[in-house]
Structure formats: structure tokens, C-alpha cells
Amino acid sequence: MENLKKLFVARLKEARSAANVSTGSIAESLGIRPRSVYNWESTGRSHLPSHENLIKLSNLLGCSIDYLLGQTDNPERNL
Image 1: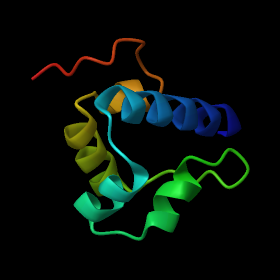
Image 2 (image 1 turned 90 degrees about the vertical axis):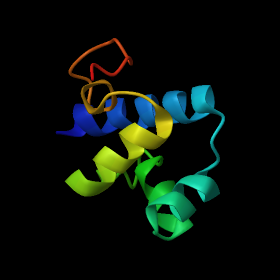
Image 3 (image 1 turned 120 degrees about the vertical axis):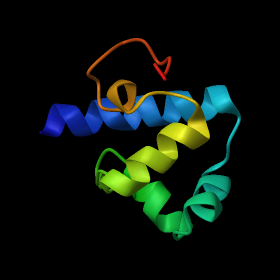
């Protein structure tokens, strides 16, 4: 589980950077506190988002949930 969290942190940061989206923008779009996004991106405090928020993150960042969770190395979404 710890490796999943570390991979998620890395993938979230990478996808957020590629999409040029700030943590504040993510928080606002998802209707959550910025601290929650910070916690997702902190390896020491890494918490995985809920299923609902994973879907919203995927849509906002334009990448697949599988990519964020390390199930594939391809960030493209298959719609």
C-alpha cells in the first residue's frame, strides 16, 4: 500500500504540472479544502482520495485513474 501511495503522489504531481493546474484550482473544482490536496501530494501524509474525487481528478487533469494509481504508464484516457 505504501508503494501505491508514493506512486500516486508522483503521478498526481506530474499530471497536475502537465495540465498546468494549481492545488488551489483542484481544491476549488472538487469542492474540498486546499489542505486535502496538499495531503494527497505529501509522501509523509499521503492519503488517497475517495473514488468520487479520483474520478473528478482524472477528468480535471485529463488523465486516466489507472495512470494515477499506477496501473498503467500511459496517462491517456480511453473513452
